[in-house]
Image 1 (cartoon, one colour):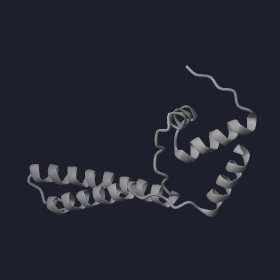
Image 2 (tube, rainbow, N blue to C red):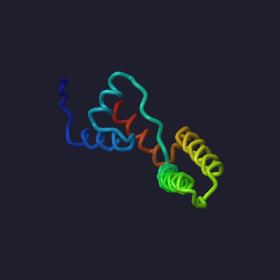
Image 3 (cartoon, helix red, strand yellow):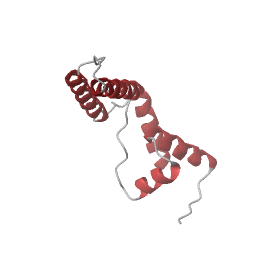
Length: 121
């Protein structure tokens, strides 16, 4: 265990940067001190899209399960299994592509960086 003393303002800054990176304060500090890369920043739109794709994927899984059960019972399936598989693969591909998208720094981020550099000087 390593302890460090920071004032209230520094603690709040570390807390906000950790939240922005999607990490706990401990993990953010560990990665920062050891010069390990932080996770890529994803925009709120990208995250919302990814969540919605996950919901759609869950629905497709349920429909696929119902289709297989219907086929086993000799009933007319609610959807074509091949189309469901293609759709599932497409959703997985889109999810992978979304996870590769990095957000561009905003003007607000630039202002924060300038304030940080002044503080260190």
